[in-house]
Length: 442
Image (cartoon, rainbow, N blue to C red):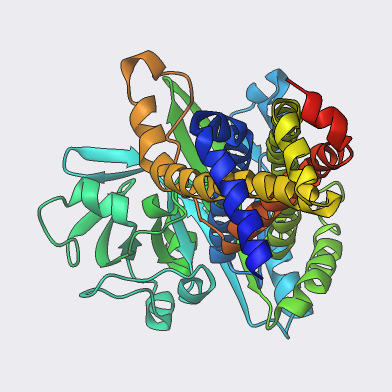
């Protein structure tokens, strides 16, 4: 044990004699370890954010949405004022009859052309729906209000539940509950305000096709009786009409195991009235969730592989410096051999030095990588706010790095291993020098 400690002491002393060279030698390891930690933390943060947004849609949910087919936007189609497409009431009835075992089946119907209150107005994002949407879409109502109930549907009540952004825009300094809101020429009473939904502007909102915080929900029966199926929208001085009987249908399975099979059954039912599925879109968040996990895994592997190249370059740098060190210390090697040191002793001394360099680089790299990961979240948006960088990207960039323990442990172990592996060859070269020739070296 005392001999081993002496070897370690000699190795560390030799490194201390050339501090700057030791630090520069370990620079490749430092950058490699830091790169692995930063890359993995950014990738893990993005993965968790994407999975969180997709999961918020409900892993047991299946969304069927009406979408305007491509030919509806062609020049010939634009000559017609009214475009009819999407889900029909017969589709809703067939799904209700063919899927009695589902947990919930909720229709949505888009109505109205604009929402108004006094001088404030915005494009309509009003949907007639049923009370079950609250649980299916995982939305919550602010205290002091309520969501739709079965009594509202039975009485065809002119009541509305508004999103958080609608409330902030139309009722900035007052409680919206009990106040009036106009949808086209119809007057509705606000009975509740939805709490802010984290999907706004994110991947989840893109999947649903809108910002959920701008939604207005009214009873499904009220939407059918007061608005019908035709929606007239004004855009750039022109008018266009769309006839859609049912805008969306949310179907909630009892378990995640039933989702894929249920989606296949729904697809076969919809193909009866929509053979090419050009005006209907079927969204299965569970499939998106699994695809996102696989994509992020492949992405992480690729990024870590790229970062690992830095560790390889660092190892090559260590071997290069140690080979130069062997030449510089040839006389020292000869003296040690003459005093009784064996080849194993020489190998051990050089491996201690390379291992110490790589270990030091690993520790510094961990600190460097963790520091960058913690600081990159607020720093990148701040830099992009500078006038010189404005316009480089569309929208806001939100980074939420998540530092993982495995990236720190693996990168450190790989760094230490790289130092030892690339230190073997210089150590063997040093141990094989002839003692007599080494003593004659100047």
